[in-house]
Image (cartoon, rainbow, N blue to C red; front, side, top):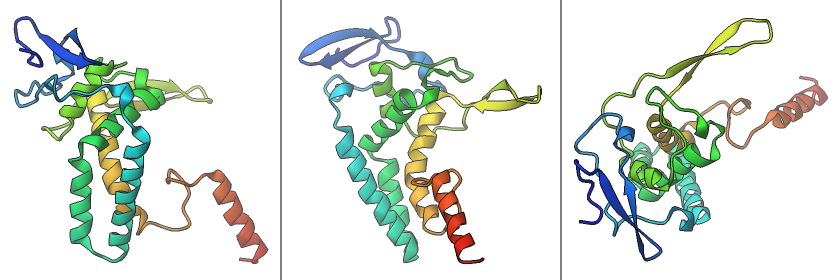
Length: 208
């Protein structure tokens, strides 16, 4: 049957532009070997390149703004409700997978499971199964040389865990931006070193 991954043949059929495409089912991306993880049916799959990413991003911005306002008003019930809608949204899961597998510079870097450079069918699989299932896998440790001749350790999560992290950032970031330090510019959305330089100039002009 189309859309069913058989254990013996491990083959799945996808519908793309009215045509059936036969592809191997990559079971290696299932990091927890969980039987509850599903393979999307052909009737539920989508063409990755036909997704309207701009429309999804606008919807996400609207919900994140609502989370921000609700946190300012100390409406925790509304904050949690909106965050759950982000975490359970199919479109926002696609956005998180796209960010990790296509936009980030680390898309060609693998974790301890050795998975990298996901194709369209693997991205579809990841979107359908992107949820918390047990503990995260250990990070892959690599040593990066420093300018003084020493090395620093860098931990690289798996592609699955990176996508899950990106999804949770979408839900948690606006909540903490509402109560975070206003005069802080490191690793903040919409801020850069230029903003910090401008703030220093204003402080010097005002004689602080």
